[in-house]
Length: 565
Image 1 (cartoon, rainbow, N blue to C red):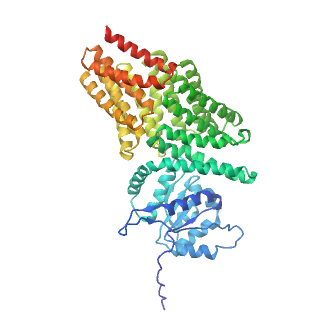
Image 2 (cartoon, rainbow, N blue to C red; image 1 turned 90 degrees about the vertical axis):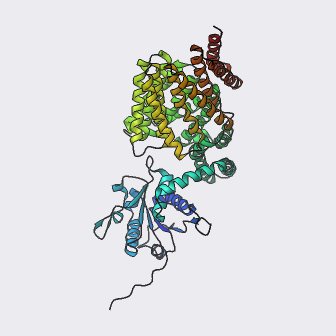
Image 3 (tube, one colour; image 1 turned 180 degrees about the horizontal axis):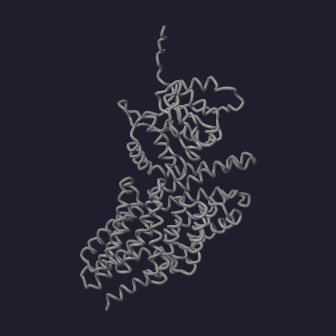
């Protein structure tokens, strides 16, 4: 007689996370990320949480079989999430959990979160085959250079909820914009926690090590996600406060006892602080920060000459030290450091050929040599091969599946520099074509992040370039219209970031370009554009020291003399 099936109870857990305990840190993060995620509010008006999610924190190495608790949780779960890695593939517990879940719930989703290794090295056999059939699991790739944590988490949520991924991505982007206003408060809170951790760290060595690891994680957050959000939304004063809090952590440390990754992280913090100083026009102060970072990364590289991470970190030091010299007009020092940067980029590419990071570094390094060659020789024919190679590397990087938002922004930068050199060679139409390609890239990025101040300002660079080419080609009316429109947009951005002298310098450049063209053509627009240039110059004069201001002063003097002739 056929036995009737027992009534099916509604699942108690939204998901069961199966993982090797070697991957416990990631599994805990994933568990927290899913349970904290909130779906759009339903008819009740309350956002629906994706909870509870089961995660077994017990070690099973000595047990003969899966525990009753694990079996009950598998039976009561709506989905299974497998944290895939070489350790997970080698784990008999992960294999048993997948097999039992599929036996209990053949119609429920099994999702994979790939965190290390290639799929064939990381996916347990039970994930790929069921009842003799080959199965292609739904997978989110959390590896570096792939989906990353943010997009990977959204893919898991999409698999759990059945919602379209593009809707979740758009909702996440909007949520990030709403959180921008709260980022500063979060930074202050993190700083307070960091300070508290530092006080507790003094009490005992074991406790100190634990606290230091936690504080290092916070510093890493400040250098990555938080800094990225602040650059797109906040002013330099807020970033100063974040940098100071992070540096306070290291002021309590014995630097000679810090491991290599801690020293490298401190060097990255110094580079970030130097970058902010440079954005204010304080290039001497920026150079001090960059040189201190360079001493640290050079020491780490000397200890670990074949370590790609050490090579990469020291390459950044060479770039930033050269950049500070570049901003001060010291091309000899710039050339020495940027040549060293190019050498390290090639070393990195030899150790990890074809990776996103290696291609990007080659693009940056060749782009630097393009800019330097043009500044030193004024000869587009000598500079152009460097520019073309830089753009080529960035195009390769942008075509990789692992390409990121920053990769696309880097490609836009290289297109802009290549266009500048073409303009210097009086190939105006070719230059404008590259500028339009640059603008299209940035427009696509702004569609995803319409409130990002950094992108909004960056979008004006191709407008300056096109205006310059139009003016140089004699298309004065088109050039003047674009110049006025660009200056008006810059004025709105400057009102939001009044302490950002990099914006002021760009406004000044646009006004000077238009004023010179109008003067040469004896056009009535010359006076208005020249007054604009004077106003921006006065702002720069209040902030920039004499050495950094000299090149602006020379140009203004030439502009005034041209008017008096």
